[in-house]
View 1 (spheres, rainbow over the protein chains, first blue to last red):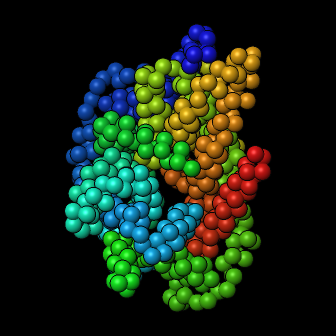
View 2 (view 1 turned 180 degrees about the vertical axis):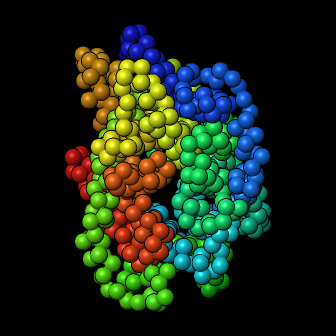
View 3 (view 1 turned 30 degrees about the vertical axis):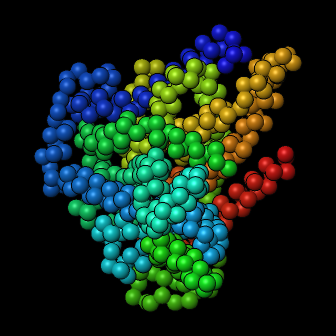
Length: 277
Length: 291
């Protein structure tokens, strides 16, 4: 800023650099420690490994009986991608109707939907568990794929976005005889690509990192998602840090890649969530 | 014709049908079912079928020592975590805001990254850092002859959980606050500078009032999130030592899915909702009146 003196700016840069160093060190340590032999982890002597080894990864991949990490990876990918696709499809239709279709009592319906945001997620945990039990969905991917479709955040976000699209575009199309479904498909959706992208990333990361859901709804080791799998096998490999840290690296890589690719979308999405009211 | 027009308007709900079905089945139904459940004695492991229990679950919670211990542990977490988190986030946002815009992206991304690391990974890492024999922190302290009981002493454990939480979540509030700072028009600061206001006065008289709505949002969201703390304590301490870090959500989890006491778990989750609702309502009132 124009008013800040040069010393102030220097101080700000130093503080930011120090802060981001402190924040990133744990992640960096995780990546290098995954390549350390166990003895070096237990008796800490240097930040970087003296001997670089792939043993930790070999131990994980070679023990698919106890640590079926590829199963967990496949489960996580399948669940997160299904949730993302379903939420985008269902929420965009609903949000379009709420933003544009002049529904009778539309405002009331929207208020009821948004009101449920006030209820913390834990309140749903026990009843949903019993419902999934009655449906026979416990310990299947359905338990983690279907309930998130009811999530409110996406409907809210997309509705706000659709409201910013000028009405003239749709009116012109309607005069040309387009049905509402075609207007939605050919005009609204292409314009909404950035919002859909942001929502998709949020839903994907949220589903990938979900912890309480899989912990409660899944039972057999083969059905675990990656985060819950590595969290629970950690208890049996209590002191074997090498394996657990290497597994953590594998669990973090997909999220890191998504983050590096879509960093701008993600951060813009978070910023908007705080500024709109 | 008015009827066909009305019909056409109602037909818009066809677009909403898939969502409304999911909403009814997995939000409204569990909400109502959960309220009902909280009035039942519903033990999944017992051969006795669920039976009406009136307010029994609620009165049990209010007289359960472990429930109050969990409430106290959660409160301690909230009271330490929220001011530190928001204060730190604001400090970082103020610093990064002084840097030229082009270079800000790097810092934004670095501070934000931990928030998208899975809690199991974050938990594994910090459990290792805090471990008393093999831990990284004690390895750094040992040359000075120090050794800290990070997660083994009840007086330390919650503070260690708070420190880890700051690392994990400070980036969220920071990004939002930085966006808020960007929205403050530069001429406010120029005007204040012409009036002879120093850095501190500008912060109190320009930054804080302009940032107020964003700050309120961040504080309320942080309080709500902090009352729901679970993953960190579950991963790092499992609620120990001596229940000092067993949060309310973990106690609900332990009762509902450890002992399969569904009615009791449901009742306590409604008590959690009441606590959160009262506090967020009070906050909005206080902030509005101050204006």
